[in-house]
Length: 405
Image (cartoon, rainbow, N blue to C red; front, side):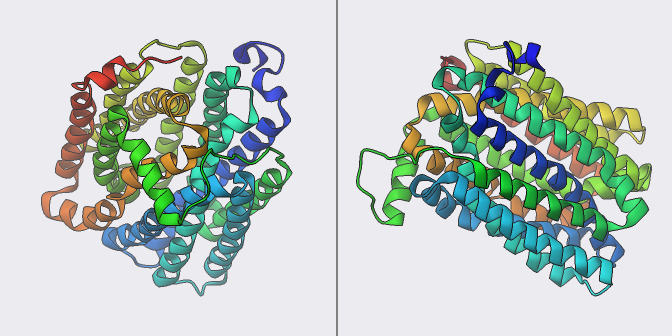
Protein backbone atom coordinates (compact mmCIF):
# COMPACT_ATOMS: atom_id res chain seq x y z
CA UNK A 1 0.00 0.00 0.00
CA UNK A 2 2.84 2.41 0.75
CA UNK A 3 4.09 1.99 -2.82
CA UNK A 4 0.64 2.87 -4.16
CA UNK A 5 0.39 5.90 -1.95
CA UNK A 6 3.64 7.28 -3.34
CA UNK A 7 5.73 7.56 -0.13
CA UNK A 8 5.86 5.90 3.30
CA UNK A 9 2.29 5.83 4.57
CA UNK A 10 1.31 8.53 2.03
CA UNK A 11 -1.88 10.36 2.95
CA UNK A 12 -2.53 7.81 5.70
CA UNK A 13 0.14 9.49 7.81
CA UNK A 14 -2.45 12.15 8.65
CA UNK A 15 -4.33 11.11 11.81
CA UNK A 16 -7.64 12.72 10.92
CA UNK A 17 -7.63 11.14 7.48
CA UNK A 18 -6.88 7.72 9.01
CA UNK A 19 -9.82 8.07 11.37
CA UNK A 20 -12.09 9.21 8.54
CA UNK A 21 -11.25 6.33 6.21
CA UNK A 22 -11.35 3.79 9.05
CA UNK A 23 -14.83 4.89 10.06
CA UNK A 24 -16.18 4.99 6.51
CA UNK A 25 -14.56 1.67 5.57
CA UNK A 26 -15.88 -0.17 8.63
CA UNK A 27 -19.35 1.25 8.06
CA UNK A 28 -19.16 0.30 4.37
CA UNK A 29 -18.42 -3.29 5.38
CA UNK A 30 -21.67 -3.56 7.29
CA UNK A 31 -23.66 -1.61 4.73
CA UNK A 32 -22.62 -4.05 2.01
CA UNK A 33 -24.12 -6.92 3.99
CA UNK A 34 -27.43 -5.25 4.83
CA UNK A 35 -28.95 -4.82 1.31
CA UNK A 36 -28.50 -8.54 0.62
CA UNK A 37 -29.86 -9.49 4.04
CA UNK A 38 -32.78 -7.07 3.76
CA UNK A 39 -33.77 -8.34 0.31
CA UNK A 40 -33.98 -11.93 1.48
CA UNK A 41 -35.64 -10.90 4.74
CA UNK A 42 -38.50 -9.32 2.78
CA UNK A 43 -38.80 -12.37 0.55
CA UNK A 44 -38.72 -14.73 3.55
CA UNK A 45 -41.58 -12.75 5.11
CA UNK A 46 -43.65 -13.47 2.01
CA UNK A 47 -43.00 -10.23 0.19
CA UNK A 48 -42.95 -9.91 -3.61
CA UNK A 49 -40.73 -7.90 -5.95
CA UNK A 50 -43.14 -4.98 -5.52
CA UNK A 51 -42.95 -5.24 -1.71
CA UNK A 52 -39.17 -5.27 -1.81
CA UNK A 53 -39.19 -2.25 -4.11
CA UNK A 54 -41.44 -0.31 -1.74
CA UNK A 55 -39.27 -1.13 1.30
CA UNK A 56 -36.11 0.07 -0.43
CA UNK A 57 -37.98 3.04 -1.93
CA UNK A 58 -39.00 4.32 1.53
CA UNK A 59 -35.35 4.47 2.57
CA UNK A 60 -34.45 6.32 -0.62
CA UNK A 61 -37.42 8.69 -0.35
CA UNK A 62 -36.65 9.63 3.26
CA UNK A 63 -33.02 10.23 2.32
CA UNK A 64 -33.87 12.43 -0.65
CA UNK A 65 -36.39 14.69 1.11
CA UNK A 66 -34.05 15.46 4.01
CA UNK A 67 -30.59 15.51 2.43
CA UNK A 68 -30.65 19.23 1.55
CA UNK A 69 -31.00 19.96 5.27
CA UNK A 70 -28.04 17.65 5.86
CA UNK A 71 -26.04 19.75 3.41
CA UNK A 72 -26.86 23.02 5.15
CA UNK A 73 -26.07 21.54 8.57
CA UNK A 74 -22.82 20.13 7.19
CA UNK A 75 -21.72 23.67 6.29
CA UNK A 76 -22.91 25.04 9.66
CA UNK A 77 -21.84 22.42 12.22
CA UNK A 78 -18.68 20.35 12.66
CA UNK A 79 -18.87 17.71 9.95
CA UNK A 80 -17.35 14.99 12.12
CA UNK A 81 -20.09 15.62 14.70
CA UNK A 82 -22.78 15.18 12.04
CA UNK A 83 -21.24 11.85 11.03
CA UNK A 84 -20.87 10.68 14.63
CA UNK A 85 -24.50 11.40 15.48
CA UNK A 86 -25.76 9.72 12.33
CA UNK A 87 -23.70 6.57 12.90
CA UNK A 88 -24.82 6.32 16.52
CA UNK A 89 -28.47 6.56 15.53
CA UNK A 90 -28.02 3.99 12.75
CA UNK A 91 -26.40 1.55 15.19
CA UNK A 92 -29.51 1.74 17.38
CA UNK A 93 -31.97 1.26 14.51
CA UNK A 94 -30.01 -1.68 13.09
CA UNK A 95 -30.00 -3.38 16.50
CA UNK A 96 -33.79 -3.05 16.57
CA UNK A 97 -34.09 -4.41 13.04
CA UNK A 98 -31.80 -7.35 13.78
CA UNK A 99 -33.65 -8.16 17.01
CA UNK A 100 -37.00 -8.21 15.22
CA UNK A 101 -35.75 -10.68 12.63
CA UNK A 102 -33.92 -12.90 15.11
CA UNK A 103 -36.87 -12.84 17.52
CA UNK A 104 -39.40 -13.67 14.83
CA UNK A 105 -41.63 -10.62 15.41
CA UNK A 106 -40.63 -8.62 12.36
CA UNK A 107 -42.89 -7.57 9.49
CA UNK A 108 -42.55 -5.89 6.13
CA UNK A 109 -44.12 -2.74 7.59
CA UNK A 110 -41.52 -2.64 10.37
CA UNK A 111 -38.68 -3.14 7.87
CA UNK A 112 -40.06 -0.25 5.83
CA UNK A 113 -40.42 2.06 8.86
CA UNK A 114 -36.88 1.41 10.11
CA UNK A 115 -35.62 1.86 6.57
CA UNK A 116 -37.21 5.31 6.43
CA UNK A 117 -35.51 6.31 9.71
CA UNK A 118 -32.18 5.06 8.36
CA UNK A 119 -32.73 7.12 5.24
CA UNK A 120 -33.03 10.28 7.34
CA UNK A 121 -29.90 9.38 9.33
CA UNK A 122 -27.97 8.76 6.12
CA UNK A 123 -29.03 12.12 4.69
CA UNK A 124 -27.66 13.93 7.75
CA UNK A 125 -24.17 12.48 7.35
CA UNK A 126 -23.68 11.96 3.62
CA UNK A 127 -22.88 15.57 2.57
CA UNK A 128 -20.62 16.04 5.61
CA UNK A 129 -18.78 12.81 4.84
CA UNK A 130 -18.03 13.87 1.27
CA UNK A 131 -17.02 17.40 2.28
CA UNK A 132 -14.80 16.35 5.19
CA UNK A 133 -11.97 14.84 3.13
CA UNK A 134 -10.38 18.22 2.18
CA UNK A 135 -10.21 19.11 5.89
CA UNK A 136 -8.18 16.03 6.79
CA UNK A 137 -5.25 16.35 4.33
CA UNK A 138 -3.17 19.24 2.93
CA UNK A 139 -4.54 20.70 -0.30
CA UNK A 140 -1.66 19.33 -2.38
CA UNK A 141 -2.49 15.76 -1.35
CA UNK A 142 -6.22 15.93 -2.00
CA UNK A 143 -6.10 14.32 -5.46
CA UNK A 144 -4.42 11.30 -3.86
CA UNK A 145 -6.61 11.23 -0.76
CA UNK A 146 -9.86 10.95 -2.74
CA UNK A 147 -8.93 7.71 -4.58
CA UNK A 148 -7.27 6.24 -1.47
CA UNK A 149 -10.43 6.78 0.56
CA UNK A 150 -12.54 5.28 -2.19
CA UNK A 151 -10.18 2.32 -2.54
CA UNK A 152 -10.25 1.41 1.15
CA UNK A 153 -14.00 1.93 1.39
CA UNK A 154 -14.64 -0.21 -1.67
CA UNK A 155 -12.29 -2.90 -0.40
CA UNK A 156 -14.43 -3.20 2.71
CA UNK A 157 -17.56 -3.41 0.57
CA UNK A 158 -16.01 -6.17 -1.55
CA UNK A 159 -15.58 -8.23 1.59
CA UNK A 160 -19.10 -7.41 2.76
CA UNK A 161 -20.78 -8.33 -0.51
CA UNK A 162 -18.67 -11.47 -0.87
CA UNK A 163 -19.77 -12.88 2.49
CA UNK A 164 -23.30 -11.44 2.59
CA UNK A 165 -25.05 -14.30 0.82
CA UNK A 166 -23.16 -16.89 2.84
CA UNK A 167 -23.95 -15.11 6.13
CA UNK A 168 -27.64 -14.95 5.33
CA UNK A 169 -27.70 -18.56 4.22
CA UNK A 170 -25.80 -19.81 7.28
CA UNK A 171 -27.13 -17.61 10.10
CA UNK A 172 -30.16 -15.73 8.77
CA UNK A 173 -30.81 -12.12 7.83
CA UNK A 174 -31.12 -10.91 11.43
CA UNK A 175 -27.60 -11.86 12.47
CA UNK A 176 -26.20 -10.43 9.24
CA UNK A 177 -27.84 -7.06 9.99
CA UNK A 178 -26.52 -7.22 13.57
CA UNK A 179 -23.02 -7.03 12.09
CA UNK A 180 -24.01 -3.78 10.39
CA UNK A 181 -25.12 -2.38 13.76
CA UNK A 182 -21.69 -3.15 15.23
CA UNK A 183 -19.89 -1.45 12.34
CA UNK A 184 -21.94 1.72 12.82
CA UNK A 185 -20.88 1.80 16.49
CA UNK A 186 -17.20 1.49 15.55
CA UNK A 187 -17.60 4.20 12.90
CA UNK A 188 -19.22 6.58 15.39
CA UNK A 189 -16.22 6.17 17.71
CA UNK A 190 -13.77 6.92 14.89
CA UNK A 191 -15.67 10.06 13.86
CA UNK A 192 -15.74 11.19 17.50
CA UNK A 193 -11.93 11.23 17.52
CA UNK A 194 -11.55 13.40 14.41
CA UNK A 195 -10.26 16.87 15.30
CA UNK A 196 -10.46 19.44 12.50
CA UNK A 197 -11.34 23.15 12.60
CA UNK A 198 -14.83 24.22 11.60
CA UNK A 199 -15.22 25.68 8.11
CA UNK A 200 -16.15 29.35 8.24
CA UNK A 201 -17.42 31.09 5.10
CA UNK A 202 -17.12 34.78 4.26
CA UNK A 203 -20.84 35.46 4.73
CA UNK A 204 -22.97 35.65 7.89
CA UNK A 205 -25.27 32.74 8.61
CA UNK A 206 -28.68 33.04 6.96
CA UNK A 207 -31.95 31.18 7.17
CA UNK A 208 -31.77 27.57 6.12
CA UNK A 209 -33.73 28.07 2.90
CA UNK A 210 -31.51 31.00 1.93
CA UNK A 211 -28.42 28.86 2.44
CA UNK A 212 -29.98 26.09 0.35
CA UNK A 213 -30.51 28.67 -2.41
CA UNK A 214 -26.83 29.58 -2.24
CA UNK A 215 -25.97 25.93 -2.80
CA UNK A 216 -28.33 25.74 -5.79
CA UNK A 217 -26.80 28.88 -7.32
CA UNK A 218 -23.35 27.33 -6.99
CA UNK A 219 -24.53 24.15 -8.73
CA UNK A 220 -26.08 25.98 -11.68
CA UNK A 221 -22.97 28.13 -12.02
CA UNK A 222 -21.20 25.08 -13.48
CA UNK A 223 -22.77 23.52 -16.60
CA UNK A 224 -20.86 20.26 -16.21
CA UNK A 225 -22.11 19.96 -12.63
CA UNK A 226 -25.85 20.27 -13.21
CA UNK A 227 -25.70 18.32 -16.48
CA UNK A 228 -24.06 15.25 -14.93
CA UNK A 229 -26.36 15.45 -11.92
CA UNK A 230 -29.19 15.16 -14.43
CA UNK A 231 -27.49 12.15 -16.03
CA UNK A 232 -27.19 10.57 -12.59
CA UNK A 233 -30.93 11.08 -12.11
CA UNK A 234 -31.61 8.84 -15.11
CA UNK A 235 -29.02 6.32 -13.93
CA UNK A 236 -30.60 5.89 -10.51
CA UNK A 237 -34.17 6.02 -11.81
CA UNK A 238 -33.51 2.94 -13.92
CA UNK A 239 -30.66 1.08 -12.22
CA UNK A 240 -31.91 1.43 -8.64
CA UNK A 241 -34.74 -0.98 -9.29
CA UNK A 242 -32.60 -3.25 -11.47
CA UNK A 243 -30.14 -3.75 -8.62
CA UNK A 244 -32.38 -3.46 -5.58
CA UNK A 245 -35.41 -5.36 -6.89
CA UNK A 246 -34.76 -7.41 -10.02
CA UNK A 247 -31.15 -8.42 -9.37
CA UNK A 248 -31.73 -10.59 -6.28
CA UNK A 249 -34.72 -12.29 -7.91
CA UNK A 250 -33.23 -12.89 -11.37
CA UNK A 251 -29.86 -14.14 -10.14
CA UNK A 252 -31.39 -16.24 -7.36
CA UNK A 253 -33.78 -17.95 -9.81
CA UNK A 254 -31.06 -18.50 -12.42
CA UNK A 255 -28.24 -19.54 -10.10
CA UNK A 256 -28.54 -19.17 -6.29
CA UNK A 257 -28.84 -16.73 -3.38
CA UNK A 258 -25.08 -16.78 -2.84
CA UNK A 259 -24.53 -15.88 -6.51
CA UNK A 260 -26.16 -12.50 -5.98
CA UNK A 261 -23.74 -11.76 -3.17
CA UNK A 262 -20.86 -12.78 -5.45
CA UNK A 263 -22.19 -10.53 -8.20
CA UNK A 264 -22.20 -7.55 -5.85
CA UNK A 265 -18.73 -8.59 -4.75
CA UNK A 266 -17.56 -8.54 -8.39
CA UNK A 267 -19.09 -5.07 -8.69
CA UNK A 268 -16.94 -3.94 -5.79
CA UNK A 269 -13.83 -5.62 -7.21
CA UNK A 270 -14.42 -3.45 -10.27
CA UNK A 271 -14.52 -0.45 -7.94
CA UNK A 272 -11.21 -1.50 -6.40
CA UNK A 273 -9.46 -2.00 -9.73
CA UNK A 274 -10.79 1.37 -10.85
CA UNK A 275 -9.48 2.85 -7.61
CA UNK A 276 -6.00 1.43 -8.22
CA UNK A 277 -6.03 2.91 -11.72
CA UNK A 278 -7.07 6.28 -10.30
CA UNK A 279 -4.07 6.32 -7.98
CA UNK A 280 -1.69 6.41 -10.95
CA UNK A 281 -3.80 7.60 -13.88
CA UNK A 282 -4.52 11.32 -13.66
CA UNK A 283 -5.83 12.43 -17.07
CA UNK A 284 -5.84 16.14 -17.79
CA UNK A 285 -9.49 15.98 -18.86
CA UNK A 286 -10.50 13.62 -16.10
CA UNK A 287 -14.21 14.40 -16.20
CA UNK A 288 -14.41 13.55 -19.91
CA UNK A 289 -12.56 10.24 -19.42
CA UNK A 290 -14.68 9.41 -16.40
CA UNK A 291 -17.94 10.12 -18.23
CA UNK A 292 -16.84 7.90 -21.13
CA UNK A 293 -16.03 5.09 -18.70
CA UNK A 294 -19.43 5.60 -17.05
CA UNK A 295 -21.07 4.01 -20.10
CA UNK A 296 -19.61 0.67 -18.94
CA UNK A 297 -22.27 0.59 -16.23
CA UNK A 298 -24.68 -0.76 -18.85
CA UNK A 299 -22.79 -4.08 -18.77
CA UNK A 300 -24.32 -5.32 -15.50
CA UNK A 301 -28.04 -5.15 -16.40
CA UNK A 302 -27.13 -6.36 -19.90
CA UNK A 303 -25.44 -9.44 -18.48
CA UNK A 304 -28.38 -10.23 -16.18
CA UNK A 305 -30.79 -9.93 -19.12
CA UNK A 306 -28.85 -12.05 -21.59
CA UNK A 307 -27.19 -14.80 -19.58
CA UNK A 308 -27.74 -17.28 -16.77
CA UNK A 309 -24.02 -18.05 -16.54
CA UNK A 310 -22.33 -16.89 -13.36
CA UNK A 311 -19.11 -15.78 -15.07
CA UNK A 312 -20.99 -13.52 -17.50
CA UNK A 313 -22.90 -11.84 -14.67
CA UNK A 314 -19.69 -11.41 -12.66
CA UNK A 315 -17.93 -9.86 -15.68
CA UNK A 316 -20.82 -7.45 -16.27
CA UNK A 317 -20.81 -6.45 -12.61
CA UNK A 318 -17.03 -5.97 -12.67
CA UNK A 319 -17.12 -3.68 -15.73
CA UNK A 320 -19.95 -1.71 -14.14
CA UNK A 321 -17.90 -1.10 -11.01
CA UNK A 322 -14.74 -0.29 -12.98
CA UNK A 323 -16.40 2.38 -15.11
CA UNK A 324 -18.35 3.90 -12.23
CA UNK A 325 -15.29 4.18 -9.99
CA UNK A 326 -13.16 5.89 -12.64
CA UNK A 327 -15.98 8.37 -13.16
CA UNK A 328 -16.71 8.91 -9.48
CA UNK A 329 -13.16 9.78 -8.42
CA UNK A 330 -12.78 12.26 -11.29
CA UNK A 331 -16.22 13.64 -10.42
CA UNK A 332 -15.30 14.10 -6.74
CA UNK A 333 -12.02 15.79 -7.63
CA UNK A 334 -13.77 18.09 -10.11
CA UNK A 335 -16.15 19.21 -7.36
CA UNK A 336 -13.56 19.84 -4.64
CA UNK A 337 -11.28 21.73 -7.06
CA UNK A 338 -14.00 24.00 -8.43
CA UNK A 339 -16.39 24.63 -5.49
CA UNK A 340 -15.59 26.87 -2.46
CA UNK A 341 -14.95 24.80 0.67
CA UNK A 342 -17.65 26.53 2.73
CA UNK A 343 -20.26 25.45 0.14
CA UNK A 344 -19.04 21.90 -0.40
CA UNK A 345 -21.57 20.13 1.84
CA UNK A 346 -24.48 21.96 0.21
CA UNK A 347 -23.21 21.20 -3.30
CA UNK A 348 -22.76 17.54 -2.34
CA UNK A 349 -26.30 17.51 -0.96
CA UNK A 350 -27.65 18.86 -4.27
CA UNK A 351 -25.57 16.27 -6.05
CA UNK A 352 -27.16 13.56 -3.91
CA UNK A 353 -30.73 14.84 -4.12
CA UNK A 354 -30.47 15.42 -7.87
CA UNK A 355 -29.01 11.98 -8.35
CA UNK A 356 -31.41 10.11 -6.08
CA UNK A 357 -34.65 12.09 -6.28
CA UNK A 358 -36.07 9.70 -8.87
CA UNK A 359 -34.69 6.55 -7.23
CA UNK A 360 -37.72 5.93 -4.95
CA UNK A 361 -39.99 6.15 -7.99
CA UNK A 362 -37.82 3.72 -9.90
CA UNK A 363 -37.73 1.29 -7.00
CA UNK A 364 -41.49 1.43 -6.51
CA UNK A 365 -42.33 1.01 -10.21
CA UNK A 366 -39.71 -1.53 -11.22
CA UNK A 367 -41.66 -4.49 -9.85
CA UNK A 368 -44.96 -3.86 -11.66
CA UNK A 369 -43.32 -2.60 -14.88
CA UNK A 370 -40.87 -5.50 -15.08
CA UNK A 371 -43.67 -7.96 -14.34
CA UNK A 372 -45.69 -6.52 -17.23
CA UNK A 373 -42.82 -6.33 -19.75
CA UNK A 374 -40.78 -9.31 -18.59
CA UNK A 375 -37.71 -9.06 -16.37
CA UNK A 376 -35.18 -9.56 -19.20
CA UNK A 377 -36.84 -7.00 -21.46
CA UNK A 378 -36.83 -4.35 -18.75
CA UNK A 379 -33.17 -5.04 -17.93
CA UNK A 380 -32.33 -4.40 -21.60
CA UNK A 381 -34.15 -1.06 -21.42
CA UNK A 382 -32.20 -0.19 -18.28
CA UNK A 383 -28.89 -1.01 -20.00
CA UNK A 384 -29.76 1.16 -23.01
CA UNK A 385 -30.67 4.17 -20.86
CA UNK A 386 -27.57 3.90 -18.68
CA UNK A 387 -25.10 3.55 -21.52
CA UNK A 388 -26.81 6.02 -23.85
CA UNK A 389 -27.21 8.82 -21.30
CA UNK A 390 -23.53 8.62 -20.35
CA UNK A 391 -22.38 8.98 -23.94
CA UNK A 392 -24.90 11.76 -24.59
CA UNK A 393 -23.41 13.85 -21.76
CA UNK A 394 -20.14 14.01 -23.72
CA UNK A 395 -21.83 16.28 -26.25
CA UNK A 396 -21.31 19.11 -23.74
CA UNK A 397 -18.16 21.17 -24.29
CA UNK A 398 -17.97 21.84 -20.53
CA UNK A 399 -17.84 18.12 -19.73
CA UNK A 400 -15.20 17.46 -22.37
CA UNK A 401 -12.95 20.41 -21.59
CA UNK A 402 -12.94 20.74 -17.79
CA UNK A 403 -9.32 20.40 -16.72
CA UNK A 404 -8.03 18.79 -13.57
CA UNK A 405 -5.51 20.72 -11.48
